[in-house]
Amino acid sequence: MKERNIFSFIFFLLICLLGFSQSKIGVINDKDGFVNIRVNKSSKSQILGKIHEKEKFTFFEDTTSNWWIIESKNELIGYIHKSRISFVKNGYLQGGEILDKIIEISFDEYILNGVSVNIYQLKPKENSYDFSCRGLIRTIHANKLIDELKYRDIEPVGSSYGITFSKKQNLPDLFIASKFGDYQGEIIIVEENGKIINFEGGQYFITHNEDYLISEWSSDLSGLSVYDLKNKRIIFKQELDIYLSSWYYDNGIYYTSEWNGEKETEKTFQIDFRGFELKKSTLKINERKKIEMINPDCNCK
Image (cartoon, rainbow, N blue to C red; front, side, top):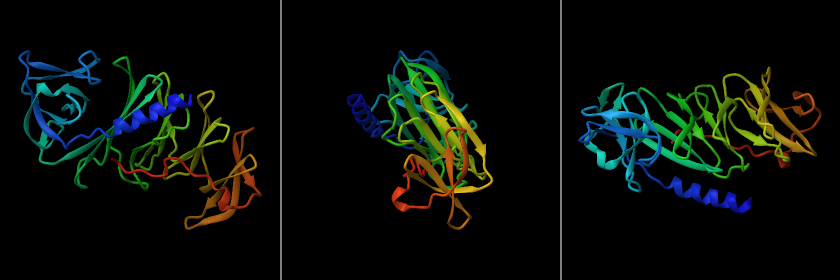
């Protein structure tokens, strides 16, 4: 198990080094009058759509591959072989209109038991634009699309924004990420079969026995979500009357303090795993027992 995790982590680091240039406008160069948009960097991968002759689209060059990421006028993201792309000008295609603005893209890939988890994020180089961050998570197996989750516009409200994840995943059969922004934080979980689920959350921690994921809501509302990692289901998701601060662990008990809008108070609450509820606690704040949260922050990248 350790060898597989090490390999996956090294592979992940290599993938993260793939660099894409800034957005450019292109048209196809093909005698057939159309080019297929592929889900992966292969002519054997699933066809997602087509680009037709004289139809303009956005593309991002990749110096490490012959397959470049493109975004069609309908905001469909996929791959086209670079030999089929002709450069028109620098810019970005938004709603069929060519804009003299630059969009930057990031691409990350994580391999989960043979399933490829692809994460795309598009961000304007300038602050003032029609969207702040566009995100897409896609799962692929055997060059076929399994599932995908799209965020057309992640607004930078409610602290940071975008999709983020730990490069050191905690569990071998799940991939876990967080989405921030829109005053609507989320936990994103990819199961080993490629299925994607998402629910209210943000930063999180995993219990020592790896039974549960605990996440506060990164939202304009206060709330708490608990996900059963063994049975792969949400067992607690509830809005709260109080705002929570730091989390602590003491002799098998997970507890948190109240945030009064300015500072952490002495009032504490603990998780009751029998009834799955948050109840008052007598435990005290102790910095030595503070839990380090996973995915504490993010900026669309």
